[in-house]
Structure formats: C-alpha cells, structure tokens
Image 1 (cartoon, rainbow over the protein chains, first blue to last red):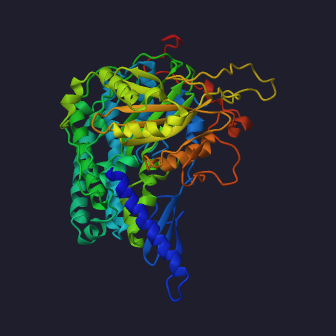
Image 2 (tube, helix red, strand yellow):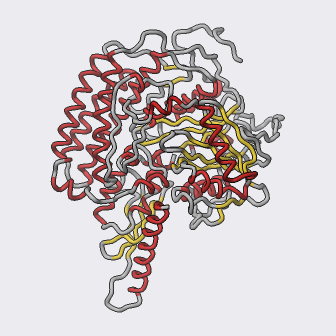
Image 3 (cartoon, rainbow over the protein chains, first blue to last red):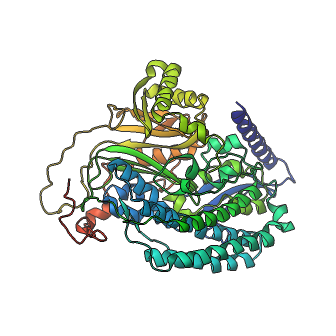
Length: 393
Length: 218
C-alpha cells in the first residue's frame, strides 16, 4: 500500500532527523535542538492554538499543536438540552459560518423524526448556508495576505464580509449566531427586499474575488511562499480524514453537497466542484477562492426560483425524537461537519458525536510540519484554515 | 452537478449496495462480524468482536473504505443524574437504569463507534464494538488510519478507553492531573448541579401558528 509506505518514509525521515539532532547535542560546536512555542496568543494563530515545535536550526523536526484552550464540552452539554436548544450551542462551533453548523444537526433530528422541511424552507436554508460559507471563506481569503505580510486584503475582506453579514442579520436577526434553523423548517420567512439586496451583494463578492485573485494569487511573493509548500498527497489526506477544500486540493473530487442526497436545494442548480492536483498550500487557497465564486453562483440561481409556501412543516409543539441513531454530515465552509445523534425517545439527545472539520484537518499538522522551515509554519497553518472552536468543540 | 459517476450511483438501489458491503465484510472477517443493520437509503451499522476491531478497519480499508471520518465511543448507561433538573433538596427520583444498546445490539455499557466512508461510492459504514467493562482496552487503529491518533486520544480522555498500540495517549483537552472521564454518563455535569437550568420549560411558540393545541405531544 503506497499510503503506508509514504507515511513510513516521512516517519523515518523525521526519526533520522531527530536522531541526528540528538547526536549533535553530544558533539562540540554543533547546533542544539531548540523548542519554539508559537501561541497560544500569537497574531498568526487564528485564536488560541498553541504549536510546540522542536527546531534544528531553521527546520522543524517535531511539532505538535496543543489543543484545549477553547474546549467547551458541547458533546456533554447536548445531553442535558432539548433538541431545539442544541442549535444555540452548535452554532458557536465554527463561529464564522454559524448557520452552516445548525443545518446538519437539524437534518439529523429530522431524519430520526422522519419529517422533511417544506421546499421553501429547504431553499432558504441552502441560501443561508451558502451565505455563511461566503462570509467565512472571504475572511480566509483576506486573512491569507496578513500571514504573508500583506495588510490590504484583510481590510477588503472585512468590508465585503460585512455586506454578507448584514444579509444574514436581516434574515435571521443575528450576525454571527443566527439560531434560525428549526426542526421542520425555519423560524421565519425571508424579509422584504432580501432577494434584490442579495443579488447586489453577490455581485460585490464576485468583484472581491477578482480583486483578491489579482492582488494576491498572481503575486510573486505569495506564489513563492505557497507553491510546493506543505504538500499533502491524496492517500495521506484520506487517512487523516481531511475534508473540504483541503481534500479537494489534494485531487479528490468529493463534495458532500453533490455526492449525497439531502433535503436541500443544491441539486436544483448548476455549479462546479473545483479540485487541484498539487496538494500544496497554493492549491488549498486556490480551491477556496473558486468555492466562493461557486457559492455566489449557487445563491444567484437559488434566488431565481424560491418556491412559495410555508417555511415550517407541521411538527409537535414539544418535540420528542423517536428512538434511533442517525448520522448527517454536510459540506461546511471548513469541511465535513457531521453529527451522530443517538436518541432514546427523549426531549433531548442521549449522545451526540460532533465530527467537526477542523479537528481532522489539524490532526495532520504533526505529520505535515516535519521538515518545514519556520516561516512556512505560518503559511501552512493559514492554508489549512481552521477555526479554534471547530477543533476543540 | 457535474459528477462523472453520479448517474451510476443513482442506478444502484441504496439497500442492495449497502447489503453488499455487509456481505463483503463478512467474507473478509467471518464470524467476527457479530451483528449488522442496514437501513435502506440511510446507513449501515455493523458490530464486530472486540478482538477484531483492528482487523475490521483493515478489511474495510481493503474494500475501498479508505476515508477515515471519525472514531469515538458511546456510553449506554442512562445518566444517574437525569438532565440535571432535579430539586437538590428532594430525595432522588426513581429512574430507569437499564442499559439498552442501540443499532446492531451489544452487551456492554460502553461501545466503540467509528465511521469509514467509501470515496467514490459515497457510502459510509458505522462500526461498533463492545468494550469490556472490567478491562476497557481495544486495539489502536493508528497503524491502519494515521488520523485515528487524535480521535483515540480524545476517546481515551473522555471515556477512559485504552488503545493498545497507540504511540502517545496524552490528554488533548484536560489537564494531566484531571480525574474522571467527562463523557461517561456517571460523570456529573457540575454546572447543572450547582445552578439548575430553567431552559426545559422555555418552549418557543411556532411561527405562524399561535394555536397551542396544534399538534399534540406524541
């Protein structure tokens, strides 16, 4: 099996490097291994991720992220909440794309109850889902520049993300934590003027993508700092359970929006899944850029034909979910976000396993950082793109 | 919707495909496959012998299920504290404390739960195995799926399950000195004990229907 082999190669390489570093300690006039702490509070760590790296000169011979600074125990908390209350918890997992966190949980509960949201609710759900993806990933695109010393893109990203957040706030009442999804549908219908406003914003966001592409992706410094850096081969990506753009940048043509049937509206419109064969930092950034563009296309098309009708199916006032187990995952801005919900016929879940994208995406870091140079740590972490709350839950 | 193989996926009825997965796995690991459940168009659950936990991962990987989704555990014991909403001054209420396992059965309180996905068929398998109460140890999957490393560390910390063959079972989230395993049902949620949560009565009215009688509690 090639995957195990290549993995072994890397392990051996790292082993040899660490042995060499240890040996040098005993030789006079040689360099000494050094431990470098990056974080927990460091401008380039997106929050409180701490990376402990052991260096040999400028090269990392061992690295390990230290998690837990943001662990809030949501899996335990869901066991003492009712189903409708859980959405308020889970939209704090990936706080930049909150609405997208609610959807798979609600879909899992609906799967157990065997109810389905009316078509109008499905379409609005999909629109809001894609809007939260745009809000999330556009910030990534801006932030990317900051990691490499370019300040301008982040201001553009914050400016244009605000338009999207205004839309989400207009529809749901919350910029960051909508808590808008309900079992059987949505809390409310769309506000007046939402459709025209969204069309205008989607145009702005497409301009933003073009600006970023011209400003950043064609830039020589950006290219030289991302091309060929942090390469993840396909089989390693699969073993670690990478998902989302990180997986597609390693050449795996897999998008849960297209490849599974969910009661959502993605299959009603025409869009593309972008992959990149390289698997390096540049590929991951590039795939995300295309994803924002595709999302604006999806939203534009969905706005054309939102079906009329109610936004809420008939569900009991007090929701009891029948006994059973269900797994639902969706393609969230960060990757595959899934909930394994175990119900005992109670008001709340008996156990919820939250499979968040960043946990798997970051678990590859010890493997990926072996042998890289210190400045590349930052670009590799930036291109993997994680949200702290999504790692620790 | 530009999937090269989406047309072929649609042609295979979900249930025959999923039943074939169970048959394929049975031909690989034989009697170690203790129980299975196929929900047509929904999902597959298999339960394997504890000793065959690792070989199941290997067998599924050879069958093409090489995408590691997650690994965790379930504690089937009903919580002795309920939902943490009891009056602390009143005597503890009577609770049904029988342990009932979920899909694909089982006989122990704690079960392993993992999920592997086929990247081209886009079908996943939920794998379970019993974890003996007295010696909570199963084989590690790290040599089969390198990504299982962190998931096993998390499961070790949260459920107290040991993984033989795991390189480094340090805590991920909690301090090293922390005692107890938080996701076990007998671990109390102290925040609830100290200050009861009033949320259970807070049920919001449905949009559009002000009628409380609509849809009885079933």
